[in-house]
Amino acid sequence: MPAIPAASVANLRDLGGLPLGGGRAVRPGLVLRSAQLDRLDPAEPAVAALGIRTVVDLRTETERVERPDRLPAGARRIVADVLADHLAVSGLPPAARLKDLLTDPALAEEYLGGGKVRAAFAQTYRTFVAGDSGRASYRTLLTELGTPGAVPLLFHCTAGKDRTGWAAAVVLSLLGADEETVRSEYLSVNTAVRQAFAPMIEGFTAQGGDPDLALDLIGVLPEYLEAGLDEVAVRHGTMETYVREGLGVPDEVTDVIRERLTGG
Image (cartoon, rainbow, N blue to C red; front, side, top):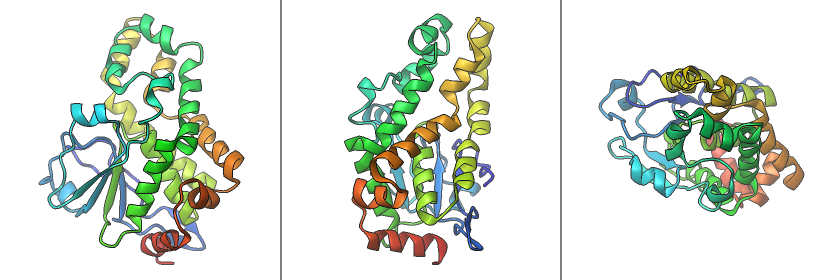
């Protein structure tokens, strides 16, 4: 779906309207995704019209402290730290160092060049599936989607592309979206993310930095999503089994989510 044109929050999107097969679609206005909400203006018409009741924050403690969310009026915030047990060994820099790396091409090449950034992201997506904090966090998200009165619900991380992108892929797959729909929705954030980081990328390349390295870092690639989907297939066989056994979400909760978000 097209991005919602809100000035105070980046990468704001509604999963509503995405096709699910059999003539069904995700109901609009119930499940949304975005980047961090530290600049959110709850009074902005595009934001206020959403009526958000629940915000699920997928960020680390450091990210939350440095850029606290501003919540819509009356909304609950649920913390679900996907990377709590993984960030230190992921091979990826903390979000706070992203700006430093993109102002120093030599440092970026040392830490992330030679394919290291792609390998690190692929491993991170596998950890979304297999890691304890990842499983707990995505279980929390799905549990909230099945909780009475929780929607409209918005989930987000920092840039709204990786932790958030995997969350969207899980939700859409569980609702019955096909692989092409899941992949297309996942990649659709690249335009917004690249626009947001355009000045940083331009400065990086002007200093001799590799533009492909910068794009691999700030955007999403099909192979990142495929790494997560492959981990699901290897460990659980299907997305439904991953949700039931890997995340520990009961079938009755899944049934409520499907009824709530699709009408059947």
